[in-house]
Length: 307
Image 1: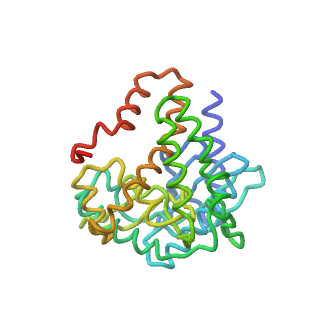
Image 2: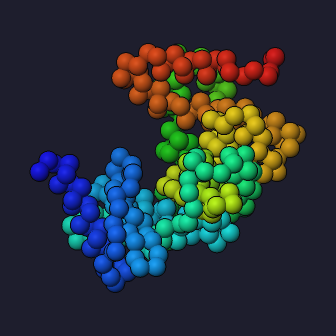
Image 3: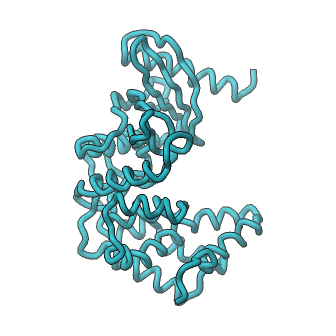
């Protein structure tokens, strides 16, 4: 038996044991689902409902699962449809796991009207952003909420200077633009109250029902306490078409006057979010990908501004 198959069988056996310990019965069906680089994911069916079990042997994953549960509970309290997390723990042989009820619906990337879904997602984002947080950061769980001040967040979590340095070295920005990005980021959190952000509000993380209505927002592992709406909008909008952007913004309730001042900040956040991907492309010698990033950073796809 190959090493990968042995690992898969270990995870399957662990998922079965977790289900029996937590639910009190053997799953009627256990199906492997697509997971991330460090996660194994299983759908476990009982007689009358379904559950999702995520497992990882990664040392730090337990805290990440705890953070995700904490964020989901806050979001659900605010009225955001999200999966109910039943248990987060570690098995006796060191596997961290999160057991949730399986949320109803189908992925919005494969079903429904994207513009209708995005309008609803915009409304949900506005509701989510009403949830205040005591400080900034993405490392929080249970009785350990975020504790970072904005300058600490920029240094320790966003890694502002490290990312700016990467972009300068790769020739994707010049010094005046780097200075502008630094200033925009410093100003973004100044005298602002931190809000709960999902961190990846895109269609791939949305489930819809047969009528095309949002039934759940999933995958809260990128949740963070940050300025809103800027943090979520930078990710949510950047890969949408113009019409889809309009749908999300209309749902959020931002008119042109309110959105216009956010433009430079959203651009700066997008530039910074691309930095590790550009660095990876450089390390891999992927000149084609770097060239595509240069086109984006040069604003060649801005087909509306004449400035």
